[in-house]
Length: 400
Image 1 (cartoon, one colour):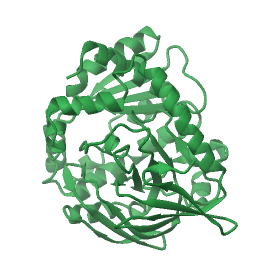
Image 2: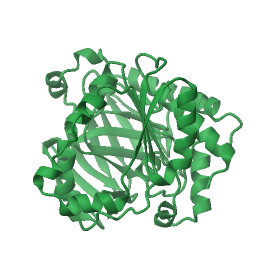
Image 3: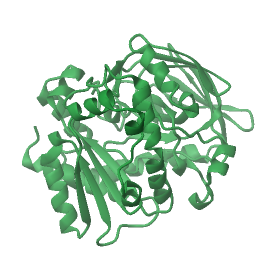
């Protein structure tokens, strides 16, 4: 679906993104990089593998099991198998310096017959692996990035032809630019300036109003906004991890999404005292409620994000959260993630951000992290600590 030139450029962008995502420290020769790919993205994986070797990295290739294997696992396994971690997995993850993940799904609804509680049980069992990588990331020893490769399934679910879908990815990732890495550096610089501006404001709360939303989040102490940074390709969002305890009101996701083989549309969450006390959806409501019951933190938010339409070229539903959470379109987007927070939105030293400190500051902890996206025309007002209000986002653009 991509020309050889586009594949070369996509690989260059992914290597740049992995390095840019390293917020503390730099890669050294012979650092270990896990290259994890779906079968459908092998053409891109090969280009990236070549470039990792040429740059004297130590790439470790892992090909993800096809969807039918995963379905069999969730359908046939018992509780002990659901909680199983392969021998040496913790040690392996504790030794890698980078991760590049390539997604190329062949079936987005292959798990629709699986009880979400079984998926949740497996996710909880793998949480210690994620925590190992979180700590290494905080220490400046690890970074990650991921991207999407076009497939017929993605195009079908998005209501596009395969060519239209591939063109959307090429536009979003600047693969048609003469020098896509330079373009990403320019855009990232602009987004970082807005993130720094937001971080400089003495914000107490953020209030979002749209046709179907009246939603408030408490920013919390020692918080900053993160912009771009390479962790996702593409990434135009500016986000933070607020104090979950101050979340209240109605949040609505008008953009559909696929998760764990399930399709959901029109998710409406009602928050009180920081927790989602009611969850409904036009489609997939029962699945949403089961996801929010995965663990204690699943019904609390871990991320609040805004995307400016002037940067993102994505103007179609892509049936993939990576692209949909960066939707530009006419009014940009706002999204929240129910579940885990991001430690790097803490303003202090990552070394001092222990579990106890995170809990005291209202950073959410969960095995879930699910982005729910709103693309309506909206106004976002920040209430400052001196009591004044300022509009920071309106009609899809930051007021910077």
